[in-house]
Image 1 (cartoon, one colour):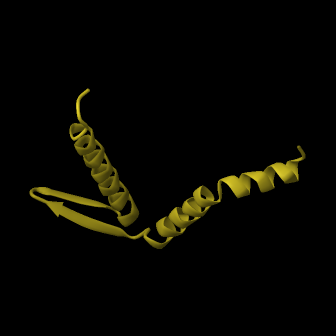
Image 2 (cartoon, helix red, strand yellow; image 1 turned 30 degrees about the horizontal axis):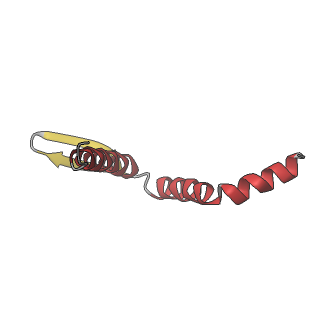
Length: 74
């Protein structure tokens, strides 16, 4: 398989992943400004994309943990 056909094959099979990476890069570039989050006594200043990424990871982990509990035991 030549290099160009390998590249085309990669694009055909992984186009959704490539598109998501491009969208993530644009999202990060658009949300580089800092924002402050206040929670109880904490004041956290960070780029908005990083805060959203952390919140997404926390929500993903909570969903995974909740999903594991609901599985019936065999």
